[in-house]
Length: 356
Image (cartoon, rainbow, N blue to C red; front, side):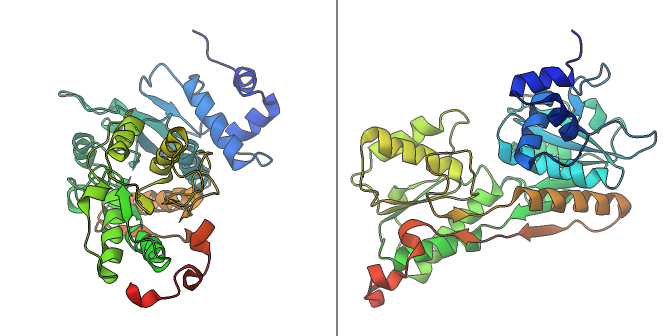
C-alpha cells in the first residue's frame, strides 16, 4: 500500500494542501487545534509509517543524523484533541532543540507476555514521555526501561517511587476542594462525587479534595452518593446511568472527576427528562471543549494542554542531560472557572452561612 500524500490528508479533512504542509512542517499560519487534527489524521493514515517502525510513527519531520530522539508512549492515541494538543506542544518544543519525536503506540489492555515496542528497548530513543497510560502492568514495564523517563500521571497502585523517572501531576485536590466548598457555601448540601478513583492518581486526589471540603464544613460523607469504583472503558454511560437510576433522590450537586464524566451525566439528565430547570449543579475538570453538552456551561478547571506539553518537553530534556539527577515529582496547577450559580456571591443564595 502506497504512502498517503499531503493531498490525501487534506482531502480527508477538507482543508487545503498548504494547510497540511504548514502543520506538518511546524510553520505558522495554522491554529493549534487544526494542527493537532492534521497530525492525528496523518498518523491514522500511516503518513509517518516506515517499514522499520511497525508500532511507531515519527511525528516531526526527519532531522539530520545523530539527532536525539524522544518517544511519546501513548495508549488509545485516537482518544481526544486534548491529548493531541499536548503531543503537538511537546513536538514543537523538542523541535526547537533539534530533538526528534517518535510516536509509540501501547495497547489499551495489557495481556500476559506483552513486550514493549522495540524502539523503546533497542537504543533507538534517548528518552520516553508516557501519556494517557493507566495500566499498572504497562507502567511497571515502562518503569523498568534503562532510559530517561517522564510520566504524566500514574495509577495509585504504582506510586511515584516505583516509576524510576520524573512524574508530572495535574493538581486537583485543592482545586476540587475549592469547587466543593463553593457548592456548600451556596447551600448545596447533598453532594455526589463520580469518578473512578483507582483509574488515575489525579482522580484519587480530586476525590480527596472533595472529602477535604466536606470535613472542613463539618459534613459527614455519604458513600451511597458516590460512584468511585472501576468504570469500564466503553461502558461509562451505562454504569453511571445504572448508579443514578437507583439513587432514592437526586443530589443537589454532582462533582465529577472530569468533564468527560460530566458530559455523560448531563446526557443522562436530558434523556431522562430530569431537572429541566437546571437546579442540579454539575461540575467537571479539564475545561474540555469537545463535550458540547457541558462545554462553557459548567464549573470546571482550566487545564491548559500547551502548558502541560511544554513542561513535559522541558523535563525530558533535563533528564536526558542529567541522567543521574534524582527523580522529581511536580504538580502543575490552574484555576477554577466558575459558571452559573457558582459564579455568583454565595451569600445571595445562602444568607445564613452559619448553618454550614
